[in-house]
Image 1 (cartoon, helix red, strand yellow):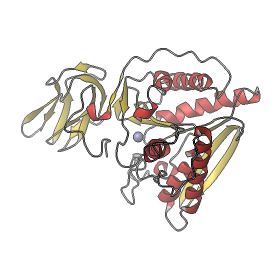
Image 2 (cartoon, protein in one colour; image 1 turned 90 degrees about the vertical axis):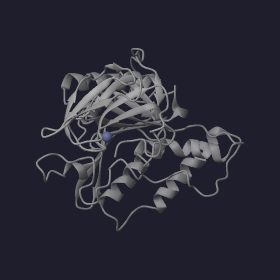
Image 3 (cartoon, protein in one colour; image 1 turned 180 degrees about the vertical axis):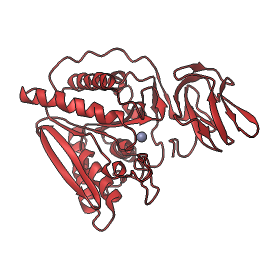
Length: 364
Ligand SMILES: [Zn+2]
């Protein structure tokens, strides 16, 4: 294992753990804690790093694997309120998982009728664009975004480990990568898989994966495969720091890596227990009013359209019923049961695209 650090102005360093060797096979990149208050993935990658170090010592790592267990040193240092404030950058209010560079805009490319050579050409152009756009005078946030994308852009597999306020494991991935990513969803025992070509706001996983299908659409006569399988994995609830659960998830990710040829070892996985659905069919349960949220359904419940999901109670006034907009699994709720107009207090993985789901499809 090689440990590398990168400086960020005014921030603790970013640390990258490297296993295997570049240029000897495929490349995998896994990071956790881009939203710095989403904790379980950091422990999962800590355990996975231990497993990989053992395998590497036995010569059982193929290709190259990069782990970034704490992808957001800036957010981890935002402790002024005595509560880790890790989703947004406190100075700018910007979401740490938005506004990554568009690597589909590469100028003119000399492409060929050969997929493998096109992958090489496009990766070289992406690397050149990243090198040419390296921030110099910009702040730590711009440098962090650029560094993470530079580390990941040429990987065959990119997994961005997040968590939700209170949630079952679930996954966001592009439709071009489904069902190719089914083993990854199975590894985290996902209870929802949300498919979206463009979810809005330029999150990290789409910055890695989406250029490939954008370029394929722009060059319809030439073979351009979805060469970067990137997905956002929501491993559970933000505060799930449970050693047994993290070790299980790390073991399952290791088996997935074995199944994909990154390491030697057992690769059997349990079958995925849900079907993939469109992100436009995922209902966000939003409160129109202020008050205490009293949930009427549990996490993992199957709800029908019109079912009562929660009641918002104004301690000084009215009670408001929040009904399910669609039928499906209630896979996420909010850990802080207080609402105000527009606040999302639940997510339901439905089957039918909803008129309400246009524009930015992710939470702010
Ligand atoms: Zn997140």
